[in-house]
Length: 354
Ligand SMILES: [Ca+2]
Image 1 (cartoon, rainbow, N blue to C red):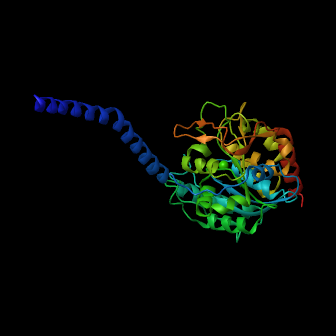
Image 2: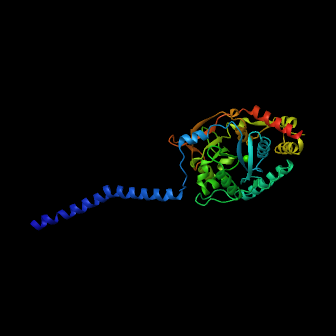
Image 3: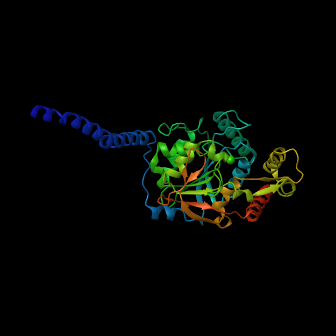
């Protein structure tokens, strides 16, 4: 009887052990699994971005008032607005000491892949410099041949080498303005290759849509989602020009171009030619010259009212998510198109009379 009572505990022990494993150990192992996955995933996306005091970043994001040093990163041949932006920058030496121009990758109906897009952009930069009698030597550089497929393996190029060199020569009090008007691939590559440059640069990027817009399927943004994410995560001072519904105000027409751009030297005639060639039917037609907006920011920031917002989180679904604990960026929320065009037309006219 004693033995029977003793062994009657065995089933109880088995049941207890099963329940212990089911109800106590299972959550324990689940936690271990989640922790393991977290470590693996975080390592897969691990980029060692440098820290910057928020007060320093906000100070760096105060709109410039004097002359600044800048580089321009442009997917010049993707359509016809980059050409206007490059000319506008070159015609504005009173505010912009333009140190270099980088060819950015793109792919659309004008280029089958990002490498071809970058090469065609480079050729277009040379074409414009030639029409303005400016040497490309030590000034125009080729950029990335592919989009940023793996943030752990950034691509080095002439553009990243020059940007890193110039950023290191700049300093926090006189930062290098990186004006970027294409997919942000070259800039993201440079930041990943040399994270310390965020302390000496301010990135002005025309890309993405408004933060309250329904999607972020905008050309500069969606072509290279990893690069867009790098820009908004890296902590660099960033000024964002959202395309829709902000820069969409910067539109013009063939009659306005014929009156103010045509007949203004070889470069004026070229700009009018590509503007008219962009669309076959000019009746009631207007065209946004997107990229001029980013140039106008460093010429007169009052034309582009802006405020500080938390840097958005780039999702894989081409949307933004928001976290109010994130660092600040400056976001433009409107652009006054008339003073921008008046300034450009005046400069082009004066240039053609020299
Ligand atoms: Ca562009």
